[in-house]
Structure formats: C-alpha cells, structure tokens
Image (cartoon, one colour):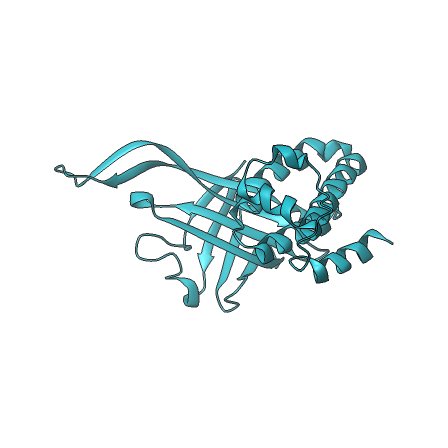
Amino acid sequence: MSRWTRVLTLAVVVGMVPGALIAASFDCSKAGSEVEKRICANSALGAADELVADSYARARQREPDQAQAIRAEQRVWLRLVREQCFEDDCLARALLRRAVGLEQPRAGTDLAQSYGQFSRTDEACFVANNAEGRECEGEIDSTIVVLPESLDRVGVYALLFFFNGHTCQFEGQGQWRGGQIVASHQEQSSCELTLSYGEAGITTAASDSCRDYCGMRGTLDGIALERQ
C-alpha cells in the first residue's frame, strides 16, 4: 500500500477504531499529555501519528539544508496545533494534514516562502485594584504559524494573547495570492484572515465577518508579528 493510499484510508477510519492493537511513534507507556494518551487509545490515531513521524524523517533526509528549520517547525506544530486539539476529529485532521504537509518542498516555490513562525512578545497585564486599574508581570508570546499542507495550500494557526488573560485561536487553510496568504477559517469560511508579508514578518487583516471573532478584548486585525 502506498503512503498516500494509507493517508486516504486513515482519513476514513480515524476516530472510528478504538482498537486494542495500538501503534504510535512514541512509547505509549510514557504518554504524558492528554493528546498523547488519546493517540495511544485509538489505533487509527496511533497509525496517523506514525505516518507523521515517517514523513518528518523523510523531509529532513530529503532536504538536509532545511533539517533544522523542519525540526523547529515540528516543535511549533506540536505546541500550537496538535496539543490544542481536544477532540479526536480535530486531532485526526491535524495529523493527516501534517503528514501531507511534510511531503511538500521547503524551497523553490512561491508558497514555500510563506512558511514559518511569527511572534510578538507583550507584557502580561491583568485587571488590578490600583490607580491604573491594571498590573503587569512577566511576558507572553502571541504566535501565528504557517505550515505546508498540500501542493497549493497552507495551514494558518494562531494563538494570540490579550489583556487580562484573554486568548484567541484561529485555524484555517489559505493560498498564496501575490505576496499575501488569504486563509479561511476552518468552520466559518466567510471569516478570512490575510497575512501580508514584509521584510521583518507579517501583518494581519481580518475580513468584516470576523473582525469581532476574538471578542471585546481581542482582535485578528492589524497585528504585526516578527518572523522567528
């Protein structure tokens, strides 16, 4: 069976097989996070996880000059994408898209220049009973990561932090359009997030239908983040 046949097969069965014979890319006796425990409890998710591991190893061997970048990208994907999935269908989608994305070239295409992690560091501020009405302590990073997911599409994943611990997450797929990535939200297709690329990083713009997506304390619009 080819690996793409395996991908299609897994796409059908993931979430339907709470199997007894579990395969995963890591030692399930040492599973730490809730996501890892769910992978170990479902044979199809375990197989999809192995597929990601295989694709990851191939990507680093195929493009050795990009090996460190791919390693860093994988760490960001684990934190911002895989570990943010609290349901099996989300986890299945994340694993399968990552497996396909890791098979895409890292250089030589317009789309490849959009890949990367983009971040902004802000003070962590909260409501306080003082003259200023706020108190700040420490720092917190807002991040958008752009990952390959097919020959002509990228995944856009955002985890943004705002005042008083308010957070906003965005997941969608997008395409390269003349120096920009335009991504539609995974569930609300009319909500589009545009990433405009500059020398230092990206600036976001939100369509009218998702300007209030992050609530009163947050926004998807007009955020500047630096390439990491």
